[in-house]
Structures are given as C-alpha cells and as structure tokens.
Image (cartoon, rainbow, N blue to C red; front, side, top):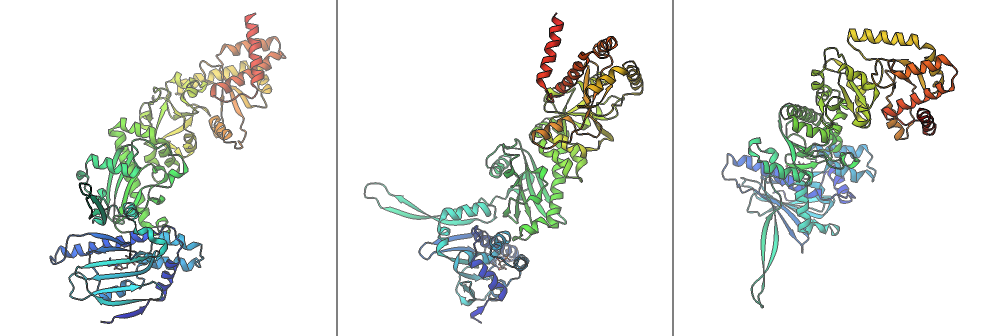
Length: 637
Ligand code: ADP
C-alpha cells in the first residue's frame, strides 16, 4: 500500500495553522465536532446493517482518557474509512462549510482579531481538534471491507502519515494528544459537561469510564478499584417522537430542562415540516412569564436549533419573530449543514422558511386555544399579551391574525376581564359604527374620564388600553372586521342619525346663546388651548379636553415626558357641556358684568378640572388650590 508521508494541501495547511494558533476561547466545540462525526458514521453503518447483517449493531460512541499519555479518544463502531477515503476526506477541504470559512477568512483579510470569532461561527469539523492537540491519530477500519485498517497521524503542521494497521472492530478511533494548556479535557466532569451541553440528544450512547474506589469491610480491608461505564447523554430526543408517544411527565421534565426549572408548559406544539425545509419542532408556551421577560438578556436566547440532533445554538434570533420570544423549545433541521455559521443563519432561505412555518403554526394554535379554551387563553394573554402585541406593528404578514388574538379590558367589562376584538364587535349596538378606545395608565384613571360619558349614554363600549405599547401599535391597527379604530378622546363621535341631529341642534343653540361668554373664556385660556366649544360628549361633567383627530394623545404625551423626551406641544380643545348648570350660572355672571375678574378664575378652574379628570398634572397647583379655597369660602358664607 502507498504508506508514507504526505503534505497537506495548501488550503488545509492554512486552516490548520489557524487552528493551532487559535485564540478562540470556546475550544470545547472540538469534542462536539468529533462526536458528531462519530454519530454520522454510525448513522451510515446502521443504514447498511438494515440489509447486511454482518455489520455490528451495538452502536455506541466511547470516550476514553489517558492521564499519563495525555490523550482523549473518541471511538465509534460506525462505517469507518478505507485508506483512500482517509486521504480524500481528511486532509482536503471538501465540505462547503469549511470552504465558506476559508472564503470568509480571505475576504476579511484575516486580521488576527477576526479569527476567534470566525472559528466560533463555523466550527470546522475534524480540524478543530488542532485547537487543543499536539498530535492527532486516527485509526479506522471500514465496515464490511477486507482491506487493512489504516492509521493516520499528524501534528497538524505540514504533513501527515498514513500506514496500514491492525484493528479488530469496524469503525474509527480519533485520539487527540492534548497540548499542555488543554489538560482540562482529561477530566471526566468536563467531558460530561460538554456532552450534556452539545450532544445530549445524540441517539447513540456516549460512554465514559469512571473509576470507582470501594473500601471492603473491616479494619485491614483493601481498597478495590472498579471501572464503571457511564452513559453521559440522555439520548432522548423527545421532539423526534410521535405526539401520542410522549407522556405529560416527559413534556414537563423536558420543559424544565429547557426553561431551567421554571414552571410548566401551558401548551405544547409539535411540528413536522416537509418540503422546502425539513425539520421537526417541539415548542412550548410557558404557563407563566419569567420575571426578566423585558430585560435585554432575555431576548438573546430563543428556541434551540439542532441539526440532526446536534445542538447548534440557542441564539438564532431568526428562527422566530421577536414577538414570540417567550416560546421555549427545540427545532431540529435535517437539511442544514452541521457547521452552519451565524452569517448563514441570518440570511438563509431555509431558516426563513422555518420561521414562517413556525410562526403560522403557533398563531393558529393560539387561535384554537382562544376558541376552545378561553380561560386558558385569557391566562396566556395576561402573561404574554404585552409581547404578542408588538407583532401587530412588526409583522405585516400576520397582522390580521394577531389582531384577532388581542384582548382588552373595556368600560363595560368587569375589572380584570379581557375582551377580544371580535367579542367587542359582536356586542356593538346597531348605531355604533366604529371601535372606540381610550388610553391611560390604569383602569381607575380611565373609568373617571369625562370623555366616556357619551359612550355610557349611548351604550357604546370603549376599549381600555393601559399598556404603553397599546398606544404605540395603534397606528398599525387600521381596521378590524371592517370597523375603524377611533380614540374616544379625539375628534367626533358618530351617533345614530336621530342622536346626531338632536346633538347638533343642541350644540348650535348653545353656541349661539353663549357666544360672547365662549369668546371670553377662550381669550383667558389662549396660552393653553386651541379652542373652547360645546359638545354632546358630556352628560354629567362640565368639561373635558379633547385632542385633534391626528394629534398625540394626552397619555402618549405623559409617557414621553416621563422618558424626558421633547414633546411637540399640541394645544387641545376644551369642550363644555351645554346642559351643565355651571354654564347657565357663568352666563348670568357675564350678563351682569362681562369684565368680572371671577370669570377668568373660572376659566382656569375649568381647564384644571379637565386636566385632573384625565390624569394629567395641572400647571399651577398653588393657584388652583387658592381659587378652590376662595370659592369654598364664598359658598360657606
Ligand atoms: P464533516 O464531518 O463536516 O464533513 P470533517 O472535517 O469533520 O467534516 O470530516 C471530514 C470527513 O471525514 C467526513 O465527512 C467523513 O467522511 C470523514 N470522517 C470524519 N470522522 C469520521 C468518523 N468518525 N468515521 C468515519 N468517517 C469520518
């Protein structure tokens, strides 16, 4: 056989050189790569064994360490390689991932600072063992072949040797002689950690011998050492099982594993996608929201991405839209390459396809939950509704589906009970044409709003929007069930024809009767408001403040101010209730003496009152208090 020393191809040499001098901190991945290769080799052998019974079938990946010789060995009883295959596969760069890596390096002009980053992104298969190795030896025997076994040895510098060797069992042994600074890989606990992190769900047992020291009975008893072979991985890729085969306990314990112990799943979603992108997914909607849901670190980790049972990352933001970031689970692709890079993930048609499929499925499951288990859905929405709402603004494609999932408290619903938009629309009286909403800090603040009086009198319900995000997504809401969304505190309210007529007449009459009074009040409040006018909006209160149809709402202004942001000053309209006794009283004062200074005080009191009832601060509390006190004193007299 053509035994002897051979030179690596230049590009391999280049790559190896990078590995040897790599500063990449996560060197653990070399073991992930070797185990993945071993599992692939067993997959292939198992496939052959289905027809050829002479091939072994007690599949296992064995790890061994030798502390004296300072090596770690990964052995499999998989397909193995012939001499030709060793030369072809190891020592050339065939696979696309590694090619892409090399190309990325060349493009980046391989500045030293970029290297660690790049290695982490690509994972470069077998070659990554040279991050920790002084020397690597491969001993391999091809399954079912009469050829000799082959030994491949290299220090990763310029060349490698291939010689004939003896090996009884089929499969491959990769022995990594560790550098001095990589001795940690001789420790069982370290290997256990790595396997559980990256290879826990590999189908085949990954074993490691543990030494057990036992003391016999009695004084002079000797210690006996036994070797116990432990399986490090759980092997249970429950997402690959059929739905009916997974018990509730299994779901619970897997969910606990994913969420690091937090709570239970409220809903389980299983998905097997075929076609453009083949993958399986097992996704959970948690029962309760984690405390850190709105902290930036929460957004980093999402669904776990696996490729054929090998853990790739839990930081693939592209897998689900941001507004579903509360989901926990696993997505296992059968057609992504194992060494898929972060750049590839970001801009990959398959990932995009997966995201669409997952999003569609989750939204349809939520819809079902809403229809079939409304109580459970209500609980879900209380926990995660705030996040889900972001989707209305962010995900144009699924906007309609998302709107149908939204819920709000309303003026007519009891406190704490949320009403869906469809439910709201279904309950609208025939005269009501639009969907009305009002925004504010809390239900209590909103309930007291004078602007709601007309809605009460007409029996129109009003959605209470108390999340800051509600106001933010409003511009994206448009319509629901062909009804427009209208703020209860801006613009006009469409009443039925009869109501509109009497309302309009009343306003016109009042405007005529109190023309000069209105002018005086308006002059007095010029600096603060745009206009004083009569309205049919009020039934009990004397006045309220109304925004322009397109202006920022008072609630939004308060949010911006709280964030110390500049707020464009938008003057609002002070609306008066023509039927309130205060108007008639003021008119009498005006008729007696149009220059009565009390009228000016009243104007400001009206304005301050309107501010207070909607929950806004008043500009000059001291003057307000003085005026009220003066009025009270007069009344007491
Ligand atoms: P990748 O596994 O991503 O293809 P590697 O550089 O890790 O890249 O391996 C190159 C090739 O060497 C593999 O595709 C496979 O054909 C072969 N190989 C590596 N490890 C083993 C093994 N344990 N058993 C059989 N073949 C292997």
